[in-house]
Image (cartoon, rainbow, N blue to C red; front, side):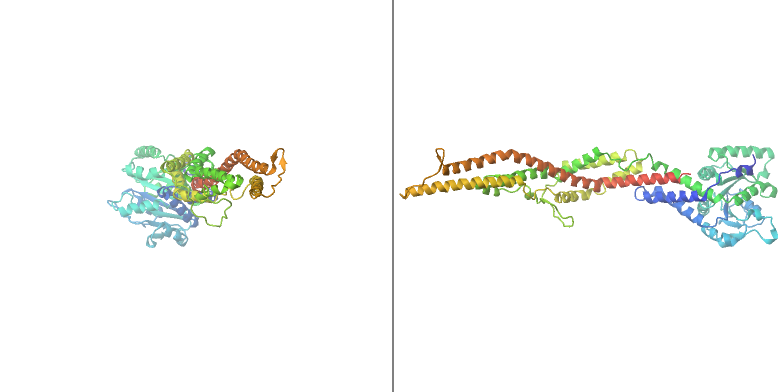
Amino acid sequence: MTLLSRLRGEEQIDADRLVERVDAIDRFVHVVAGQLPEQRLIGAHTVVERAGARLALSRDHTVVALAGATGSGKSSLFNALARLDLSPVGVRRPTTGMAHACVWGNLQGANRLLDWVGVLPRHRFIRESALDGNDEAALRGLVLLDLPDFDSVERSHRLEVDRLLGLVDLVVWVVDPQKYADRVVHTRYLQAFHNHKDVTVVVLNQADRLPPAEVTRVLDDLRKLLDADDLDGVPLLATAALHQPAIADLRGLLEHTVAERQASLRRLSGDLDTVVDQLSDVVGPAVAEDEIDRDTVHGLTDALSVAAGVPAVAEATERAYQHRAAQATGWPVVRGWRRLRADPLRSLHLPEGPVDPSTPVGTTSVPDPDSARRAAVSLAVRSVADRAAGPLPAPWATAVNTAARSRLRDVPDALDQAVARTNLHMDHSPSWWRAVNGLQWLVTVAAVAGLLWLVAGYALRVLGLPPLDYPKVGAVPLPTVMLLGGLLVGLLVGVLVRPLIRQASRRARRRAENRLRTGVAEVAREYIVAPVRAVLHSYAEAREALESARS
């Protein structure tokens, strides 16, 4: 198979699909911003910027760079392809300090592209003219660059080469028979282009210095080195810059590349492949955003509930219910003594009914958590982070742990506010309290009336007045029945309602605890679980974006 037939069989790059891949990398960068170290995203930022700029510039021009070491004959090959002496040629030292450009066709159309590449106007040349006829028409649209020597003793030359190699569409690596196996060219440059096989060409220049048999042997040896560099299949040509027939294959390759107008797309596709490979370790298996299971969240809510004083508030609610129920249903004569006791719930400065969300509330008097409770909260938060970060790659696991602890300082105040805004349903009296209270007052009034009736009869007897004739219930006077009956019924009612009060107070405790835990769970979701799930959501989006960016 000839070189050109192999090139014609190369897969075409769809420009629209390439734009989609660039957009996917750009989306990836925006999604992971703040989640991953910025150093990991330098390559992605660079390729998005370069791809956007290159796609916005001329699609009718193909930028080809001749890159080589000192003495490889790179500049001579540049002049031979241009058929003009445009780039200075040196023998013992590097003479190409700045890139030179030769444009086939309209120079004006390539100026914006050369401005972006960074070739100075005085180093730009136009090759095609009316004197050439159609001799150069096949290369119309080619922008050929002669780069500085990448092994130059001048550091600025090497930096310029590195910069330009990241911008050009196709690279022709020019090596000579003496230094074709040089370790620098292979380890520093050629191996770095393993994702750019479609836009890489290797030329063994100065082949005319070797006998024909040696040319074949050197090419075979060079092919083995390229295979070791993971550049198997890249075009490998032998040229002699001083003989036009010896550069015919290279010229034919450039003509095919210019006519195809695929080099820039293939270069950008290779850049994207490189970035995707570099970032492949930051994504792993698919993870659902609700990866945090209920048991883990339940454990976190338990720890936060204890830290928020939910058990203490629930107990205070139970005791307050008992206190208020006894005061409402107890014997009215001794209720005054209960008023001297502090209400357990009011001592915590907690609301007893609904709280307007727009109304600010003060801090409560719930005791602050001790060190053991704070440690339990820290352990529960770590459990949430570890559970969510389990299947994630290391950078994301770190981001999850950071997110889980990102708002821990605000949690104590949030918990106190959650407790302070919880409706404990202690702002009204149950109807059965009022019924028992009415009964207690009824029997108390009966007992007092019986007592006063008996006192009045006794007073009449002391004064020597006619005694009262008491109605009787059996053999017992009615006033005595009223007095003793009222006292006994009042005491009996008090005894009978105690089990009801205890049962109802336990229900009030459970109700308060459930409502308090609901508020605490909301704090857990907002301050701990939500930041973790935000990272998981970012991970899912980043994973999807990186998958979309794959070729």
